[in-house]
Amino acid sequence: MIVLMGLPGSGKGTQGKMLADELDMHLVSTGHLVRLYVTGERRQRMLAGELLDDQEMIDMLEKLLATIDDNKEIILDGFPRTVMQAEWLMEQVKKGRFQLSHVIHLKASEDVVRERLGLRGRLDDKQEVIEERFREYQRLTAPVVDWFKTHGAPLVEVDAERTTTEINDDLHRLLKI
Ligand code: AMP
Image 1 (cartoon, rainbow, N blue to C red):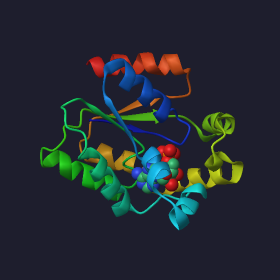
Image 2: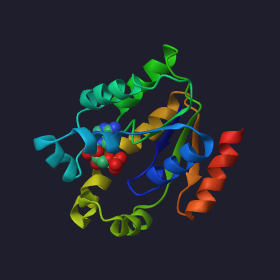
Image 3: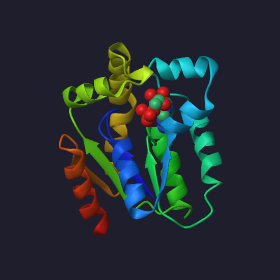
């Protein structure tokens, strides 16, 4: 399993899709799952830029993982986003359910990704929602990077302020090792 982390707009979706196509891997995006399955009040919360409940996300992910029945590598985009989710993931790794080969932190500043998100045009890419998603990231997700560092996860940082191709080349180099 390869975990992609980073601010909204850091390129997790783009890079994840490229890698999955190029290396024949599964791409599991919890953002896609939320947009597919979640309606009502929880969808409104998502559209306001808030993270959804940890256990609900884990249940959604569990259901999806149960449908993957070959041994191909899985790229995880958008999970874990909280320390609780990271603890759950590492628990699964300890149980031998997955092998975690890389946690890739796509590192970019808020200024750089703000510009990218403005061009994307999703409903939760509106200026005020972007700011809320950044706040959620700093409050809940940034600590996950440090948590991984102190828990022996194979974390690498990649400069995600470069072009799509440059980042993609770097990821291929990384994954070959
Ligand atoms: P994304 O497409 O990854 O930016 O995710 C879109 C939205 O889905 C996020 O802003 C959250 O509201 C929700 N979401 C996706 N993944 C998670 C997660 N692992 N934990 C909590 N909420 C999530």
